[in-house]
Figure 1 (tube, rainbow, N blue to C red):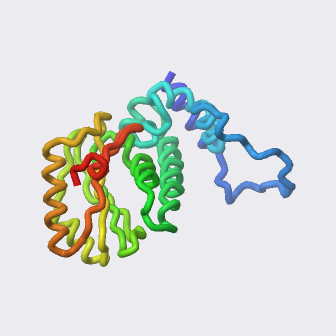
Figure 2: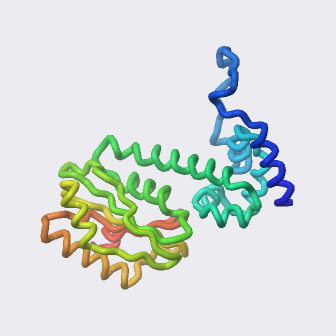
Length: 234
């Protein structure tokens, strides 16, 4: 079935016209806005891929991956291997995921990071479904406004190297007064390891020398999270 889908995608892409080459009709929009929340994953994916003539691929994607999020955050090589579909579909999914992450981030780009839920939700969108560990640092100013969201290191399925000195160096460069550190656990278990706890203490100790506050260390996974602050580890 995957070979047939690949062939269909190639044929569709051969006749697909870029948007700037299409003579769009000039007419008023009379249809009611689409109620996106009522659509299931297959319907959402089919409608999105219809724009490139590849809606037939929706079934194959959701057969190979349990959710759209996991398909979008898989590597290109893994996506192609598991679905047999051209990588352009994967590129489109990643673009959609990036839009979602930036929409989520905008909620605290414009205001101080006063809501734990906002930060947690954003970090889960960014890293919760990643197949490998990633370590991110949110650099904040004196009023807890976001200066920079930096995915500083990427590791393996169960390990990511972290260098406290580099975090502090970047904070000083940005003039950051506080940080939130975070990483993901691809296993789905957000319980902090002893290595996680030790590393967090090292970051706090290094930050204190320069009067930089570590607000929290948040571990995220698929739908779950762990806050060091809530657990009393900070």
